[in-house]
Length: 388
Ligand SMILES: Cc1ncc(COP(=O)(O)O)c(C=O)c1O
Image (tube, rainbow, N blue to C red; front, side, top):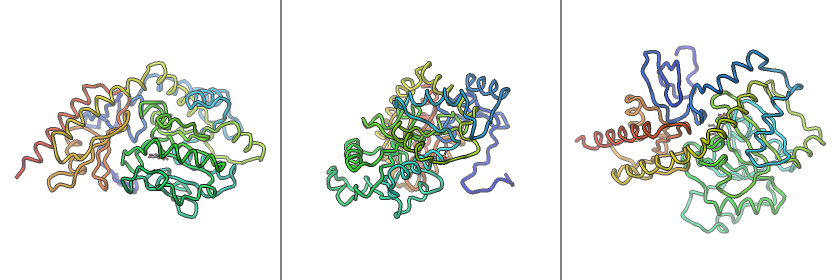
């Protein structure tokens, strides 16, 4: 790779083909993908139904321009509104998760007239923009992992709720790969206080959404209904389409006040076709229930590893967002396990700073793939720890 800028780690494997949870390199070697690209292929790679609708749409029209959302955008919007549980809201389709989160905060700022928003300090929101920077002149940050206090009043003391436009909540627990889920009570208390002061609740469902946590959306574990929801990744199953969903009050406010936003690929028919089909497949094939079930047994297997090896500090997760956190050890680390797994043909996520391995496979993964991974992890731990 001489002409691809190295602005992130690059692993030199030339993947040329995928099928469900497998990726194949140019030598025909098979790898099991337990990261779903990057939390994206909820239905697995190369899904025949997605391919079919894409090929059919490519033969019609793929791009129309911002003035011409068509019946496909309208149909996709109806489906998205249905799954997020907003009856008469409106949507905008864009291309990436970062755009969807940044757009969500922009419209919340516009509607509330307030620049400052609250979010958890370890939540990842976007690659750029205000949501990417989270500078303290625009963001009030809470670290809920900083102590063992379960006293929310104490934790929320000093938060200037009346000066905030809202709360941007990332319910995937995966900010920077930690896979730690904020406590329900704390989130509900924040939502209550934000709403009391007229603020908005924005859910960043880019990673958590589309069934990854065992429900359609991560916010559904908290019994809250956000005003604005940002979707990405799984919505396109690897194709770059994202969406911002808002309730009707916000939509009417923006339209009445002639809010203007235009991007080249806004509401493009190809992305909308893919999003609509992803939703249909998740529904028809009951994949969220299947993924949740597989995720539960996967977590149990990871917990067995925790019982067996002291180096495993914690096995944790929700649905198909799972992690193993390791203790510092001279013979083993998340990086060394990642490399050993790669050599054995498994792709997982890892976060060296937290000594964390992440497992985020497609909801369609088979139990047999998980058993093979667990056997491989077991062998890696046993071999590394037995070395003198
Ligand atoms: C929680 C979360 N929000 C937003 C984003 C940004 O999405 P994208 O990389 O598609 O711009 C990511 C990307 O990893 C994410 O994990």
